Image 1 (cartoon, rainbow, N blue to C red):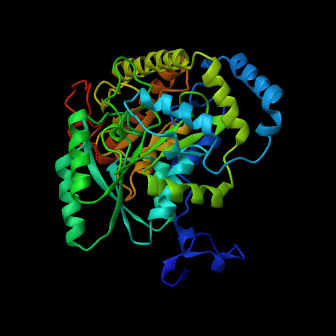
Image 2 (cartoon, rainbow, N blue to C red):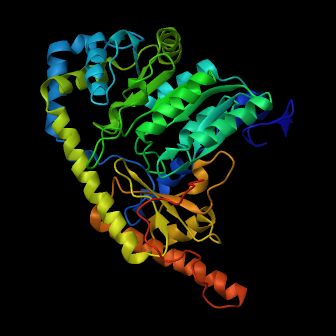
Length: 439
């Protein structure tokens, strides 16, 4: 059933099926979220969700910060607050962003309920039905859910081992403009990309900013993982060299804990004003309690040392995943991230990661199929493997189980083809970098 020619979310068992707004058709459960119920079973090794390893955070440090906030500022912490965020907290956010080369004014920071909320607010402000969002291919799964919920179309631009390809970006922009399409912004995760794990080089950052300026396109820079490098920092944030054309999104979910639900947007002045109004319309004010607890933590704890501890944890787990892939799946290719949470695996071309997932869960291992990260359903030959949460031992176990599933699929295909087990089309090289084109 459709309404004004637009498929509606829901089904005919829903008595309100015909009453939903057309934009509700864009709301879909992401494949990542759908996996959580199964992947959370203790017998399943989950290489699917990007859950930070919060056990590496000393809980007594957080408890002490909470206690001091309630003792000294309890009446403020439990009250409504500003729609923009507490001023001292916004000043501290500047210190965090300074680690990636950003110099800014606290007046241009808007505190949000996680950077996901900031992404939703920006989309709400800019996207009309039929607008175009340019994004890397692949791209962050829930960002695409948000864009589709505002009835925008996502145009994927290919990546390689150095991130988004500028020449391809130029070509896509030219084609879209020739077709009369309206491009609202470029959404990018330049550092330790989710899901591809690659990092946009400094040279490309500058070139892409130049392309965006030439074409009057806003850049939405999403940076959850930028401080979680393993050996060398990523290049400075794009916002560090471009103030007027970039909205920068940050979060404490990866460098502290996601349970606080605290993020922020750093925006040009005029956009900042509208973000504050949109924030107030959506949530009235971000949590005063969470802001004050994190502010106390930043004031009293060795937060930079804690980020370094997280780096060590994730470096060890990344190395465990790459070692397991070399041991059990040496014929395949994958990315070698310099930070963040994710490895992007490429399967033999005859395999389908989405179709294979139920069999993987039966073998007690979970991953996220590549189709989750493309708006057009591409990515069946890929999967995202997360190394952030499982122990190194469980990572090895999970990859071993995954190898069993993949080999079983190849054997099955070989049997039906009547040729015996199929050889992988990959030439046997062990890739430290991704294939030339990630999409």
